[in-house]
Image 1 (spheres, rainbow, N blue to C red):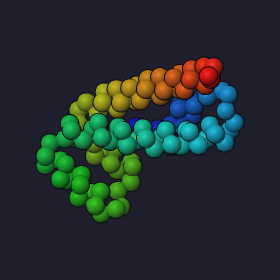
Image 2: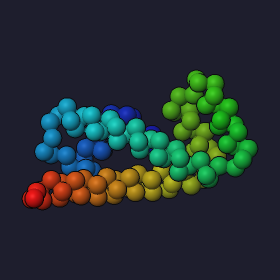
Image 3: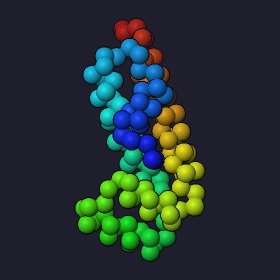
Image 4: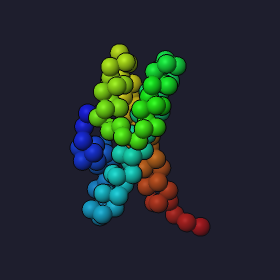
Length: 113
């Protein structure tokens, strides 16, 4: 996930086509989506780590000084399928978000009793 936070926010806005929202609402949703997406990618990558690599990563994280770039470099170095896992995570995330938005907008347009 070598993209910057701002680039990821723009990607979220493009993929979800949030056209009927204010800029503040779009920004807030994009920020939350990027946070969720980053966590999801991390969760999807962890099972691919060996037990030893999990301990190394845990120690790196517990120091509290690990930047996103350093963590990504570590994961890229030890996971040959890093890019594939990230791509699959991102695609699944956007598919779920589009589905949720479609359900929400469909529910909004249904008449109430």
